[in-house]
Image 1 (cartoon, helix red, strand yellow):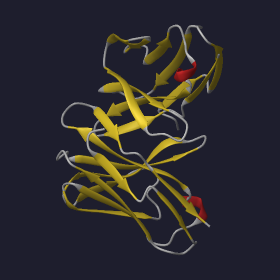
Image 2 (tube, rainbow over the protein chains, first blue to last red; image 1 turned 180 degrees about the vertical axis):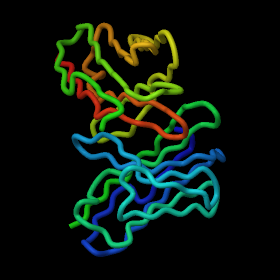
Image 3 (cartoon, each protein chain N blue to C red; image 1 turned 180 degrees about the horizontal axis):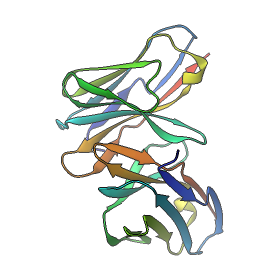
Image 4 (cartoon, helix red, strand yellow; image 1 turned 90 degrees about the horizontal axis):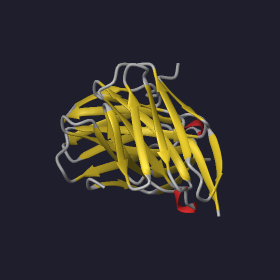
Length: 112
Length: 107
């Protein structure tokens, strides 16, 4: 599993509240990714990071921000959660120069 | 626009049948991946390939770079193969994913 953990694993929150999801890796990988998975859409990239303090937007970045102050941690923040952000969120890493991607266990977020 | 298209979206098979899932992509790639996701579960990488064919147990993955097409075959399917199979391509530092094929194998 490439040492990737996500927290929390499940969360229910109310519309308008801020939410932060954490991805932690233990193997010093440079690239980290946040995806959301929704029925009919597959996995879609929210943001990714290519190093400490280096991040870029993906195709569905509106309403999300990220931070990476340490190599091992990549945080995803929903500043003001909306019902459309109810989804399963997966963190992933890219293994070095090889195009191998490993996924965390996922976080199921429900916004009521 | 969908960089990666999979077919079929849903597939039901009897135990023991030979199964094929197809993937077409429209971008230049560094590698293609086949992923497996069991219901409520995490995502596991089955294969990464950039040319030719790979085999792991009853699973075989092939890729045709010129035609931008890949297939995942499962021989002698088993109920434990029931899962969603996802095709993904890596290009640059990003990955693009198909919407998945939901496979159900009936005993």
